[in-house]
Length: 284
Length: 277
View 1 (spheres, chains in turn green, red):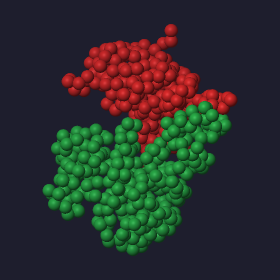
View 2 (tube, chains in turn red, green):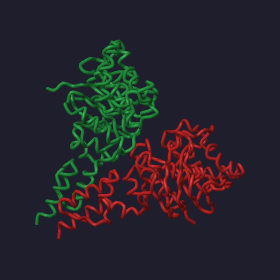
View 3 (tube, chains in turn red, brown):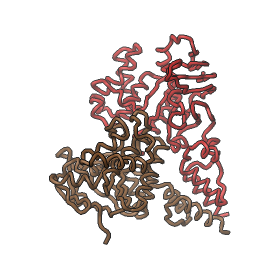
C-alpha cells in the first residue's frame, strides 16, 4: 500500500491577496518500508508536502493516497482520525509541544486519545520510551528537566506510542549538536529497520542523507525535481552543483580525485571503502 | 610578542555549588586571530563566552579583555570592546525594523542622532543588508537576521567578536553566507574572532583551536596540532575533519599522506602518490 501524490497542487490562502502556491503538479510515489529523505532549499515546499500525509493540509488540486485513504481536492475528508493514527508527524522543534507533568504522562496522551485504556497506554508508553532511549529513571520527571535532545526523544516517543505505520519527521536533527544528531539518525534507522516503520525525513543534512537514507526526493520552488535512490543521486555531481546542494565530504573528495585523474567506483560511499580502493590502486 | 586580545587565568565558575562548570581554565587569544572553541554539549564552552562578556560573574580568576581586566566597575567599558552574536536569530532581534535594531546599541552608547544614520547605513552595507533597512524581522530569513545581529555588533566598533554557534540554526545557504561573511570581516586581521562552533570544517580553517571538556581546557593549538590527537578528540565525542579521517584510514593501509588540512591539496597529493608510476 503506497503513498501516492497525483497532480497535487497546494495553495496557501487561495483567492486572497496573500495567495501563495507552495506545491505545483506533484506526482510522486513513495516506497513503503524504506527511509526516504525529502530535500530542497528553504521555501521549496518540503514541509507543505509532508503535511499532506496526515491531512494537516488538504490538496487544492489533485489527490493524495496514503495507505487505505484517499484525500481529494475539493472533497471533505472524514477519516482524519484513522489516518493520523497510522501516520505520525513529528514537527520541527517537537520538544516545544511537550505539555504534561511527567514524561510518561506525555507519551500516554496520544494512545489514550485514540481510545486505548490507561493501563494499556502506560504499557505502550514505556515501550516507546525504551525504543527512543529514555531511561526508566526519567519517566516520572517533568519534561522540562530534560536536555533538548532528550525532550525531542520524548516527543518522538509520543508519536511512536500511537503505533504508526508511517513516521514523518520534519528536520528532526535541527539545532542538535553533531553527536546528538547522529544518535537521533541511528534511532530512526532502528525504527525503520527493526520496527518496520516507513520513515520520511525532511532534512538539509546531506551527510545524513548519504549515511542513513535509501531514497531521496528533491523539491525546488514547489515542484518535484527528482526522485531516485541514494547511489544514483550522489553519482550526479554536476546536478548537485546546479541544484545548489552541498554534497557530502566523501562525494566532494571523490570528485576532486576524479579531476586529478583518479576515478573511484560509484559504490564507494564511506571512508574505509575509499581507503581500500585507493590502496588497491596504489599496489597495482 | 604579539598582543593578546583575551587572556584568561585560572577561571572558575559554577551554576550549582556541587558541580564545577568551569574548572581552573586558562587560555589566551592572540589579537587578530580566528580562534574556534569546540566541545561536547555541556562542556562549558558557552559558559566561558558568557563569562568573557561579563554576562555571568566569575567566582575567581582573571579575565583580561584588550588589556583591561574585567571587573564589575568597568563592565560598560569592556562591552565596548567585545561583542557577541548568539545562536538563535529570533532571540536577538530587538528593533521593529533592521534600522532600529542596529540603532539600539548605538542609542545605548549615546551616539548623536546626526551620526547614527551614516553608521547604520555603513554597517548594513557591510553585511549586505542595505536594501532591507526598513524591513521587519518577520520578513527576513534566519541568515538575514544573523547578518543584522552582526551589523549591530560591528556598528559598536568592537575589536573582538564572539560567535556563539551563530550558524547552527541556519539552513545550508544561511550557514555558508554567514561563514563567508565572518571570514571576510576577519580578512584584514583587525578584528579578533572567537567562534564557538560544531562545524568541524570551520575549525579546520581557523588559526587556533581550544578544546573544552568537562569545564577544562583539554587541548589547545593549531588545527593540525589538535587533530593529531584523533583518539582523544573522539573520546570527547567530537568529530575530526574529513581529510584527517581519510588520511588516517590511508595510513592504516600503509599509505603515507602528509597532514594536509585542505581537501583540494589532499586530493592532489593522493593522486600524485597513487598515479606516480
